[in-house]
Length: 469
Image 1 (spheres, rainbow, N blue to C red):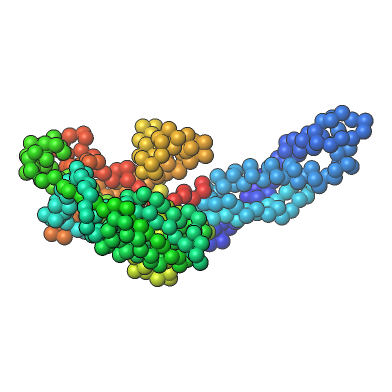
Image 2 (cartoon, rainbow, N blue to C red):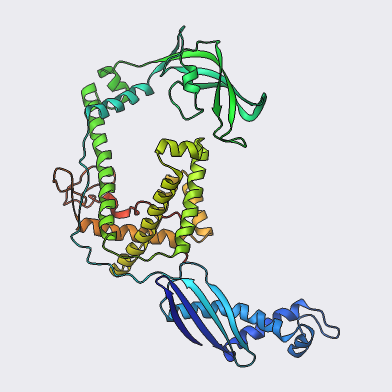
């Protein structure tokens, strides 16, 4: 077999492959046997029809095509390997010459991984915000804890923001009830939002037994985004009474003896969470610094596919949350054009990050062992809310393990880049990332369990799908 490669663009290559007829012969013999099993010829048993008879009955061209269909994918892979090309998608294949008993020739044009040069990444510097815990932050957490132990009591007064009400609700369009837009006896907290526009405003000052009509737009179903009339009836108004925040409550709600100890624990936990957020910001800032130094050509088809995947994912999330796309844009303060531009920028950055981290991982000869793969799959299952065993089975059945391995290798490569960087906060303090534990606490540098959170983290805005290998 002879092959040549032509660079069509920074991320596009065209292979021209010539296959001598002797290399096609095994596939040709197999094609004759396959066709012999499929045809009936008087005087011959099924499967025993000679090649010359098949040529007369079916045609030599059909046999050649059967053989070519088998041999081309094999020779395409061999050509990729011989020229050290890494495809990112399925190729566009064209058989350009068929010389019976001599050779066949085909071309394959495909998006390939770009050849990039990553500069020395040791000693990068970046800056992130400080870890700051305010009294208001602590008070908010304490209030949420008190609400978990609160009790609801009926009140003989109109509903106010923060009250819980039991409501019946029905939406109509042109006087007809909308299918699926009716609830009965639902508990709802006034001011919570996220259901129907205008509902919270309507409920304020309504008492038990009151009903009210208002106009709104549906956020789901066949009439999503259309104007409807909504009738809401309040059956019950309750206010939440919270327990006093004292030592007795601390003993009830935690392992601490005093409210002061509980407050300090809340403050410490908030600090751990903020520290993890800071580490994630440090990871992103260092990666951004590196990407600024690398010119990464991106295949248009890969970017387009990822954009479509992101759009579908956002649409699914909005539908699950009961929010229209227009409402989402309104809350984000974006126009459609601004949203699309921002999404494309993030997708391009994410794909570029993949290529750069893959190159660094290859340069470092980063490997992945079975324990790392198992732990990564457990984390992914938890993040997606799936049963771990079902997630593992799905990954194995659909051959997604190579994608998971690639994610781990990128995370390990990024961890080394970040650990070699100097990251400071707004006050100029150097942030300790090497000794950050997964729970946000800082370990002793001399102890083995001190392990930076970024070691197994993936780059921010990781594409939803790994480019085809």
